[in-house]
Amino acid sequence: MNKKLFDLVVIGTGGAGATVASECRSAGWRVAIIDSRPFGGTCALRGCVPKKVLVGAAEVLDWARRMKGNGIQSDKIGIDWSDLMHFKRSFTGPFPKHREEAFTKSEIATFHGHASFIGPTTVQVGTEVLESRHVVIATGATPKNLNIPGAEYVTTSDQFLDIHELPSSIIFIGGGYISFEFSHIAARAGSQVTILHRGSLPLENFDPDLVTRLLMKSRQEGIDVSLNTRVEAVEKTSGSLNVHTSTNGKKIKFRAEMVVHGAGRVPDVDDLNLSKAGITVNPRGIEVNEFLQSVSNPAIYAAGDVAASGGLPLTPVAGQGGEIVAANLLKGNHLKMKNPGVPSVVFTIPPLAGVGFLERDARKEGLRFHIKQGDTSSWYSSRRVRETCSGFKVLIEEGTNQILGAHLLGPNADEVINLFALAIQNGIDAKLLKNGIFSYPSHGSDIEYFL
Image (cartoon, rainbow, N blue to C red):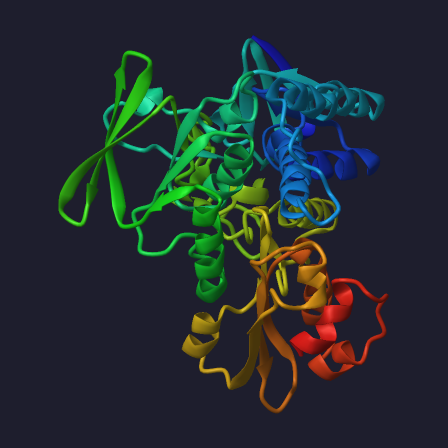
């Protein structure tokens, strides 16, 4: 075995891992970074970035179709899936090389392969043994095990983002953001789409009133959403896949060319041999303290989706986690994770966004507040683009006039939600935000009427 010594070994090259490695190397530490997949992480290669490219194409098509008969001739507009994937690869293709070149330029040692602990701070990668003062785990998340017969026939979300041809029919297992985002793309590109969700309402982390509106819109677009439907098995037949389900006590079979896993993700730690390093883990990830330090091995830190208490599984939160870990490594534990007002978006068409408290959670906390809500489909900002699915709900605390939560559905909701997030993060009350002067006419100028 070839043994090498470092001050820091980072496992994972996504936003969190890259941030820690770069900050510590800038401070003069000897740093190594490892990944078993192309350098760059989920967001840049298998998540946010490629997904949003596909969403953008679907938005163009949807907008043109909505405007048909109102100055736009859209009969010949369509999506060429092969060309779209080629465009997507113009973003994802060069990224691993660029990221590795940046590491090399900074004199961060790079290693390709599966990392496995063989001691408290010793990691093996192939024939290389890396000994270090500290190890940071930032391996992200992976699709959870479906634990059903025929799971091997199911396409992961990673794989879906790289298919060469779009199947004529697709079934998505699970009613989370992955299934809804991909289904809105696929349906507008011409596929027959079905979502199978075991609960009574999908998108459980978003405002249920707005989810109900989006659900209606999804069905209008031809997406068959089957609720209270538990997937029990996937069976491969000649030319198609059968999905066996249980729905309200009845056995129902669905059939499609492709079945896609959209039923959630779990921390990607199974292959790390964490027990050899004395690292405790639970179903939510590596157990860490408020400084993102392992509770069982103080030489280990975890950041991003892999940390059990590392915040929401979102790219900006992972990046923040990386900055916090780097600061605590370099200057001792002093920074803690804080996630006040982190916005989250489902990039459907139209997008659904939220920040802060859901109504049900605010009531559980015993908070006193009033609600402003409404259907905005008749407002100019929606009528101008002929979008019939739009609405809002804002929670404002009694007495303080602080914005507790904001939930938006409609065109540009993914951008407008950032203004509410900024208000929550900085204590800007509803009156101050309402009295702001915004460009007009714009979606931002609607904020006055949300409050």
